[in-house]
Image 1 (cartoon, rainbow, N blue to C red):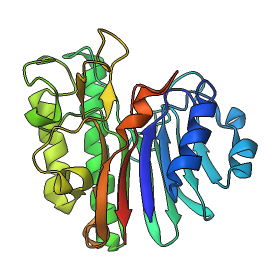
Image 2: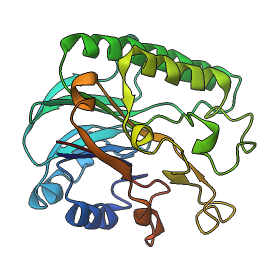
Image 3: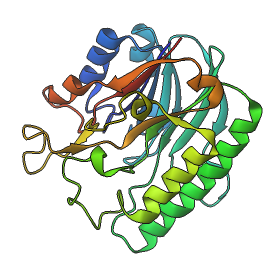
Amino acid sequence: MLIATFNINGTNARLPRLLEWLEAAKPDIACLQEIKTVSENFPVDVLKEAGYHCLVHGQKGFNGVAILSREPATEVQRGLPGDDADEQARYLEADVAGVRVSSLYLPNGNPAPGPKYDYKLAWMERLRARAAALLETGLPVVLAGDYNVIPNDDDIWDAAAMADDALKLPQSRAAYRQLLWQGWTDAVRSLHPNGGIWSFWDYQAGAWPRDHGFRIDHLLLSPAAADRLADAGVMKDVRGQEKASDHAPAWCVLS
């Protein structure tokens, strides 16, 4: 089972690229972030023709997550629990083919310090609570998405770059580590322990041609899922296409 996470950076703007990728990679499950559209405008019919069922949690112009799957999916949770006042569309959870999957888009948090960073850390605390509850189920679970966290110095082209950025501040990294300490496995990291793999290259400053990237798209596996991990990586070539997203899909294969 191939499970991928892909920050598409606007589904309607990049629908041709999305369809090309689905045809080439043929993921069994694709978790999308930053679809940037209300649910009603998501291209469900087009994706159905491409062979995918769709669950969508959209928001006008910003955020938004979706789960595409070859087999029908059953929605479990829409929106991250813990804050009824939070209206941002950043979390969607479903059961697909015996696996519990979430598509999540963690807040960026910049500028830090400030209210946006406070929201990021609070969101991560809520995610930690949800993750703990999911572990208690004993199910194979994959928490897939754009975490907006660079976990280690070797997950960025230059460890000194972005020293004061919310993506690599000590509190962000600590919150990510606390997730791992619950018992989750970072799929890509576990099979590529020396780092040097990026999933994001900014549109600015020639980041892509200079390979100045970093890794912020992660798939965290529960023990029952980690026992089935066969392979993982990043589809870097997707980033080099015309009018591409600034992210490349991260993926794992469960046997």
